[in-house]
Each structure stands twice: as C-alpha cells, then as structure tokens.
Image (cartoon, rainbow, N blue to C red):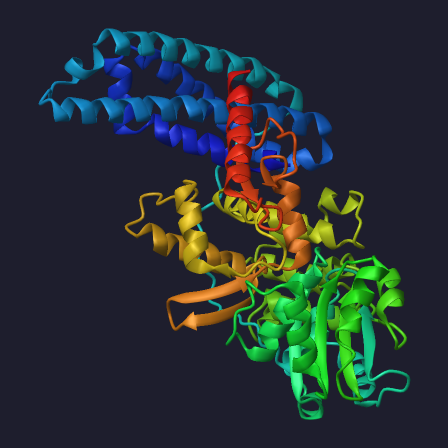
Length: 557
C-alpha cells in the first residue's frame, strides 16, 4: 500500500526538476527538452494522484496502476539524482583546476558519453510513464489540489502518565484488578493475572491505572514495567527486568545467561514485587515456564500482571482467571469522542455535528483507540461535509480484523496531509514499542528528503517539530516523555498504529534480518533487526555485500 504516497514522490521529483542546478544541467548537456517533457508528464499525472489515492482502497486495478506509477517515479528520481550528482562532481573537479566556465566541465568526451546515456534514460522513463498515464482515463479521476501545509492545532503535548480522571469507563475493571492484586497467593508465592482484550481497547491504559494506584504502590516493595511485544526473548526480558529494578544504574550487556539468572533471582529474593508484562504474544509455554521459574523467589503475594490480545496466552500464563475487558458503552465512547473532537464546552455550539459524531461513534464498536483517532481527526473541522464524509466513507465496508478499528485508523491516515503520509509510514521500520526521539526522527526525515520548507522561512528542524506535533495531535504518537524541557522528548506508537504504518509502507519499507535470502524489488527503505545482526564482522560485511549486489541487479533489470 505504499502507493498511498505516490503523490508525495511525484511532488518531490518535480521539485528537483525545477531546481536551478537541473535547469543548468539540461541546458549545458543538451537534454533540456527531454527534462521539460518529463516534467510535463509528471505534472499531468500528479494532478489526479490525490483522487486516485483516496479511491484505491476499493479498487484493486487502481492500486495496481498507482503501484506501477510509483516505481516509475522512483526510477525518474534516481535519474535526476544522477544528473545532480554528476554535475556537482564535475563542478568540484573544475573548481580544483580553475576552470570556471560551464562548457569547460560539461564538454569532455567522458561527459558527452554520459550525456548521451542519460538523455536516453530520460526518454525511456518518460515513455514508460506516458504509457502508464494513458490508462488514467479508465478510473474517472478528478484533478485535485494538494492538502494545505500542516497547521498546528492548539493542544498541549501529551505525556505517558495516565491521570485516572482522564480515563473513561474503566472504573469497575480497575477496582476488580486492584482487588486481585491485594489478595495473598495460595499455591505459589507469585501469582499471574492476565488482562485480555482486542487491540485498541485500552489494556495498557488499564494496567497503568492499576500500576499507579496508591493502594498498589503501598502493597509492593518493588515494581517493574516491561513491554514484551512480538519477541519473547528470555535473555532480553531478564535484562529489562533488572534495568527496572536497578533503575538503569547497572549495565548487563556483557553478562552471560548464567550471570543474568543469578542477578535476577538475588534481586527478587524475599521481595514482594509487582511485574507488568505488557503486550505479550508468546504462545510457547516452555519459554514462559523458563522465565517464570526465575521469578518464583519473590515473597508471598507477589504478582505478575500480563496484558495480551489472546485468550490462549492467558490460559498458558495465568494462575488467576483471565480478566477479559470489553468495549466501552456507547455513552462512554461518545464522551471520549467529544473530548477529542471539541474544546471544552464547544460541542454545545454544534448540535448537528454532535449528532453525526454519535453515528460515527456507533461504527467504532466500543474501541477507544478508534474513537480517539476519529475524534482527533475531526478536531478543528467544523464543516458538516467533513463529518459526513467520515461517517459515510466506503472504508467502513472493507473487511476488518479488529472490530472496525483498522477502518477508523485508515480514515485517519487518509486525512493526513500528503507530506506527512511518508513520514508516518517510514516509522514502520522501527520495532513495536520503539521509543522515538524527536531529534533522531527529524534527522532521519531530513536525510530522506521528507521535510519540505514550502517557502516557509523556518529551519528544517522546526518544520520537523511541526510534523511530530501534528501526528501527536492526531493520536498517531503517544506516551510522550520530556527529557530536556523545550528541546528533547521521546514518544511511542500504539501497536495497532504501528500495524497501520506497516500496511501502508509495504513493500517499500522493509526490516531485514541476516537470514533473509531475497529482497523484494520494490524495496526503497530498509532497516536491520538488531536481534538478527551477525556477531562476526566478516559475516556482516558479506551480508552487506550481498544486499548491495541484489539492489544493483534490481536497478539494472
């Protein structure tokens, strides 16, 4: 579904074609006409791309057409980049030998051969794009205007602390689990309480409420919070638990498994502890038992609180009956929606919008994440047409696997300004529960050419901050932790939001591991799984060489 940001790629290539350097190259190398024709072709296609991207969800043919276009756009960008690189290289060479006239460094026999080759490539890619573009008449596409640049909504930045008064509809669930935590253990010193529910229901939020409750804080001498996610790696989990106990004062990176298990058992010996294992996916009972055996030295009454989407996992791990949380009532969901879509008290000024909002909430099937996502999407939108388009979107009719949640998230994604879609999709390269740094993420976006000044008199870093704040305000990011006041902070993505990013990024963005034998042709951005990275430097170099050769072969194919 990386076709969703075909417009952004076309826009970027057009920007490069219009640069002063490429204009100079076209004139000096005799390819001015070819580059102008390529520019015209791209401009013609670009005009209908926004409409095509909105309609592709319900048309396989349109998706396929956009996919072919996107590959062509990337090939066109590669050609333009080569022109730019060669021009800059020859300018540096010319400067070093005091040749200052344009013709002097663009007229050597080597340069002439390059010019002919590149001129042929420009004609070839333009022909390809013309042929694909000819099919656009099949889809009845409407020419559109790009989304307006990001305008920050007037909201304060969020943070990871969960205030009980901000959580709606979970009082009974909270009291029930707090009660279980207060009970003494019967058969073993350490008991396990599983919290089960579909994605987006608020299992983690509920666990945080319980974890920070004053009664629970006073009940346990040691508390630990560990996010597990997809990989149930016992060694890594022990290190995370030890880090929580020691509060980061000691590093265990070089410790053997024998040393780690000893450190863990000694740290928990006689301690009445509460351990939260958040977002567990492991179905291998043997793996769980190996970790469990290392946690059994705690004092009587110690508890492990597990959050998971799967009942089968709860049955493997739990000693208490699973606590299955349900969707919120319609009334509670509407309260959440109003809180996200309006400023305090503003909903009373818009009775018609509130009625439409009530119908939108009905489609969210009691899932708070879906409700928050659409409420955030409609914040600051006061036109009835915007609200009706969300309520009546065909996206709701698509097959769903999370009780309507993905439909709501897709609608939020489609509403993003085109330049934010790529920025968001690129986040799929990071692991689930990854702790993003605003400084690092903005640097990556800048390196990928995804931050656009649009004529604004602002630094790239400041524009990147606007991008992050907009994604925060739309509930794509969460759990903000301030590190340096006014400068540095971290944040995360909900698992389902990460799934959404992967859905739209594939097959363009891919996380590779050392054992992968093939690399799909359409991959443009790759990341490496640190858990799979080879231990020996020679193996790593061989893998990188294989990766480079594969990509080169694809480009030449």
